[in-house]
Image (cartoon, rainbow, N blue to C red; front, side):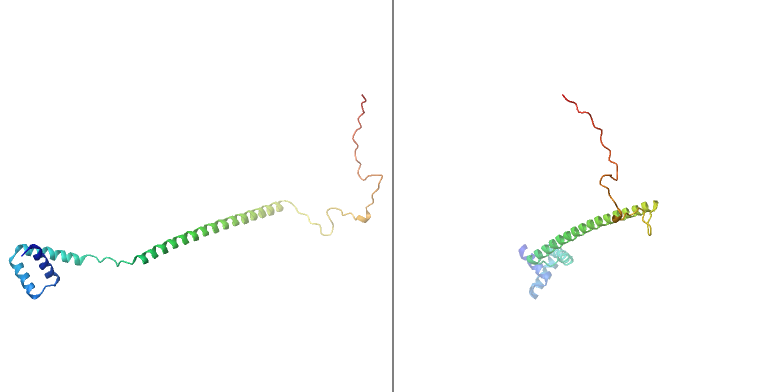
Length: 158
C-alpha cells in the first residue's frame, strides 16, 4: 500500500467515513504496521487539537460591514457637532454671566458710594430756589451780571 493511500485510509477511519471492510483493514494495519500506528497517533492528536480550537466568529457580508463603518463615522461627526455646540453655549453663558457680575459689581459699588455720602431729598422745600418765570424782570440797559470789558490798547499809526 502506498503512503498516500495509507494516509487517506487512516484519516477517513478517524473521521468515521469508512466501510466495514475498510474499518477491518485499518484495524489490521494499526495492529501490524508501526508506521501506520504512528501516523494514526499523529492524526488523532491533530484531530483533537482541531476540536479544541475556538470557532471563529461568523463572517458578515461586506455591505453590512460597510454600513456599520459609515454609521460609526456618522455618530462620531454628530458627537463632535454636539460637543462643539456645547462648548459655544458654555462660552456664551460665561460671557453673559461675566457681564451680569460686572453690572452687579457696579451696582454694589454705587450702593457703597451712596452709603458713604449723605443724600438729601427735599420733600416740601426745594434745595435750590425755583424762580417763577412770571416774576422775572429783565432790564435791557442794566445787565443782570456785570460783563467785564477788555482793556483798549492804543492804536499805533505808522
